[in-house]
Length: 453
Image (cartoon, rainbow, N blue to C red; front, side, top):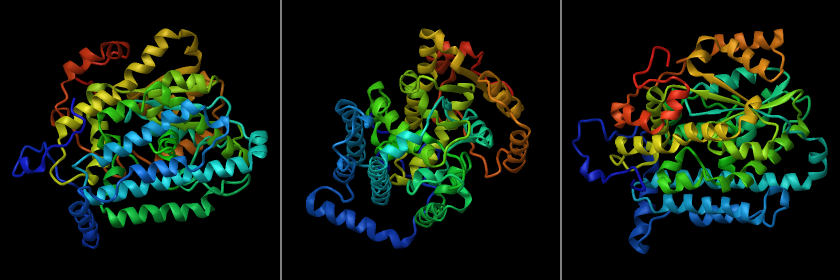
């Protein structure tokens, strides 16, 4: 497989097949000088402006040396290797636009600064945090993207005795919520919304298109590991643009220890200042990449593993990832077929890795429960009840009423729907089933999806 999914845009002009789509974002004219700066720098030095490697590594290295609670030198170096590989992948990709490079550098350096600020705050308050913070038996929702993880997570987060992170808590890390604070009055909401407003102004259409599949809002409960990746200079969203080698490197087992130690410290800090009454609920499809390492980091974790027919779901996640990547690309360079191969090869690991771990470790089955997409959407509250029964948790009348209110307010498709097909991404469902036969067989999925899949 080639490193990037892009093609030379000069070869796609006039194509009417739909294989090489145009950008759905139309950048405003006032950003034109970004291209001029990039071109001038390239003419003078042979390399364009807005490089990521130096500023990202500088930001990553700023908090060093670190207490062992953040990982061993070897574990931290595994993260640093990923930061360098991501930055190099973007810097060496000729098909990222000047505006795309500037936005990517801005976003990732900002998140790495979040990491530095958080580590400094933690160490300054380590005695209080370690004495008062708990991150015990977290309930973690994971599985291939677009399998119902978001609905389940946000429904279970309606449990008033649970705690789950708001987007603004992970985008604007400090100061943390305090016990008794009204989270809807936190000043970081305004700052987080302001950041989204800037992105909407700079890249009109980006958030709107993304929201068709996944509502992104400062006050929604959001994917924890996505932000832990961001804080550490990594991503499973724009990783495609850094190349396939980076994508697969970033989900190797040696990346998990320091990443999950950072996560434990982060949620221990949040819990120390605004504790969960009962338990934490976190969610991210990307946890499934590190399924074995999850139990090494959180021996008491309780895992909800979601499933949907790959023949239906592979193009769904590919469409979502397309909407998040194409805004940064040179016009006409996006190849849907190459992107589809990368997407299924990468995200397919979230089918095979949990299954392999469970086969090898049947003793963990008491900590794992499956939830299939068709059942989640046919009876979401019933699915939550089944999960809570499995883990000896109580669905109180207040919790059920809040779930009913959430469902009434957030009907599927409220913010639009992505349209997608296997054909547009050249996904061969027979080949998909042959490659992931054990997964298809375990959950009785067919290459022609059934109604509700």
